[in-house]
Length: 309
Image 1 (cartoon, rainbow, N blue to C red):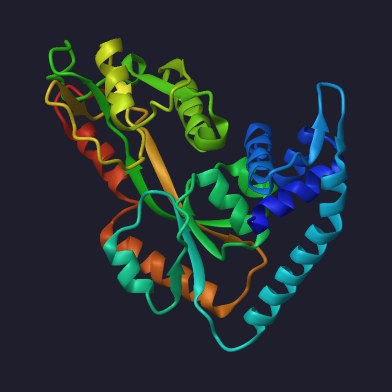
Image 2: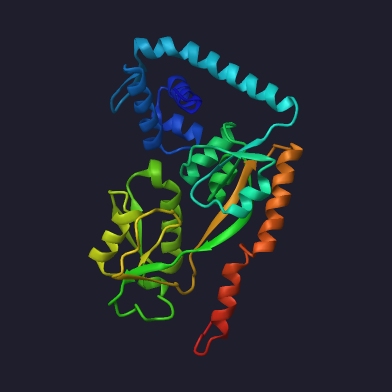
């Protein structure tokens, strides 16, 4: 059992409603339901009886409530004691972008969390205190809901992937309106990406394609591009699948899709170690020019012949 699972279980046990519990936890209902099912599998018993109309605790679930509260209270108290003692390294979570320069710079202050999870999940973990910091994408609404602070570290410009024989394959840029974005039905894995993709489609006129196979990345993504035969927005997710020789990457015209990697921490976390990490990362950002890269590319495009702004 994980502390996070116990927190989720307790929220459902107290609300007796998955939707309200998910709203309280600031996560998607399918993700909450998936975590409860995983906890039930690990324990080998059902914790809730649920149908479309109501949710109630089973006998096993009712027995777990008291123990879950005690475990979480002990864990929270232990965390407070540890933070109040001699300086300890902060726990840093990440998603898929973690440059060597960053880990070298922060090695004496942070330790990397072993769980590489989606942006929305890492943000919730920071808010609930199981992480001190995270490098992730977050939108303004969730930032406010979770009461987090975000410091922009890098803007990663995302390209379009398209067949090499497509009419736009040799173009300097693919028009935003000619791009398709993939939105996956699995919100527990792709909530942050889906929110980004839908917002980009609304801003740039890109076409939204609904999928249900996790093909936002990896070989499944390349298969979608090959089958659709149109430019498709590439996600920032790193993977090991080799890039097919039949496909090409091309930059996208305005509005240029920029995935913002931010350092997240709790807004009220005033520990000097947190301030030190923020200071170092912002210094590294300036040195590497991460946040400015997108703006520089935009300026270069404006200077090209035939560019109309």
